[in-house]
Length: 144
Image: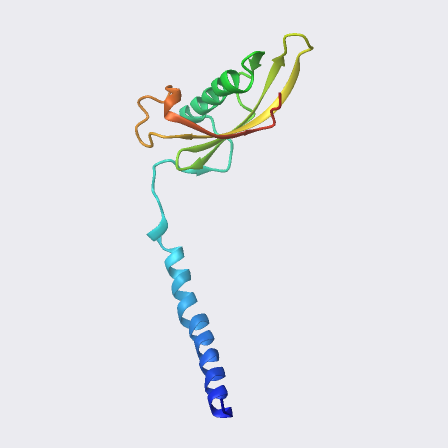
């Protein structure tokens, strides 16, 4: 390769970088900021703790799951209301609460937990009490 060819390669690479920065990236940012990727589900996110029918049912379903799957051999007393119930949008919720655990041969103790749960039937809220319509993504704060 001679010096002219190397110079053309370097100029070509610089031209491609400038084209990407000045043309391609602004176009990508405009597309990402548009409504193209926006999914309107009717379930809006809320950064504040809310007390709605959906968050109340999510709280109940988390408690049912914990009682049946996490501590089936213990006596549990759940809080009447969650400490916090947050709507993440797209019918996903974070429930923060606490429960009292009474093991068979030990003293009772209280544990706080967080439960991430999703309602699977989207806009059809006619059967929100059915546990089959909910999916637990994770529970943290509880240990056997």
